[in-house]
Image (cartoon, rainbow, N blue to C red):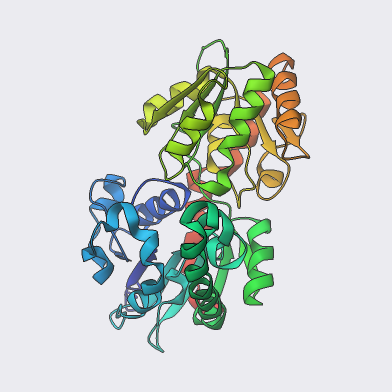
Length: 371
């Protein structure tokens, strides 16, 4: 009996500029499939983990555009052309991890394409104002971007059938895929490194923590206002285009620290020390709250989107019904005074481990004929 040849796998990611939730899922797939090659519009060297960096990485012409490392979203209208120029003739299976355009690769007829969909692109569908509204680009700039993003949304919809199968990061995202792409999706939750993020003997200190990209829809402004009302110090870890505006908003608005990027070890220590971690925006899933729960610490999150699948209300934290500073302030104060069971919080987070994610994705990738 002959030995079957393993499939040649290509992994496609929109862009590699930091280690967020999508990149952590990509990292596990790189470890599971060490022979896979990686395709991405843009790669900022050193911005992702060694497991990703050591892959053969193919980039597009976007890589060579001026100031692209910090201004890549300004080139969004070029992304459809860029993603369609990749050639996958050498591969049997293509796995795209998509929050923008990776799902729209053009595959050869013999190859199978599974899309792990982080979300249909937010800025083209339902969050235009947050990214390209008058408050961000000015009235003229916003007016110019609107028809471009409308065209991008049409292209996104029209290329939805280029994937043979969709896998969503949450039931919330599966609903978005159904609404915008008219496609069904299996749900495989993203990986959380529950071996690394773990409890220690620290006694919680009276401060709240946010670990997040500083992007408009993350609603860090809400966390700042809520902590001021609750009279609770706030520590913010992360970088992004909103940092300067948020620092201005925080001036004279309570005890707020901006730490920028921090190492994984530093972030773990902050999770272990914080009285509560906050998720003030409506997230498609939300890795940071589960990392905090893996450390045995409670979360206060907006009770919408993916948080409803990752936070158990009154057991691993509190879900807030209203996206208002007072509602969050009340929940933060309640969480700090509440006696949570750290062991139960940790046990809940363990259901989202890297091993579980890798096993579920490997099983899907191994059976392309079933797609």
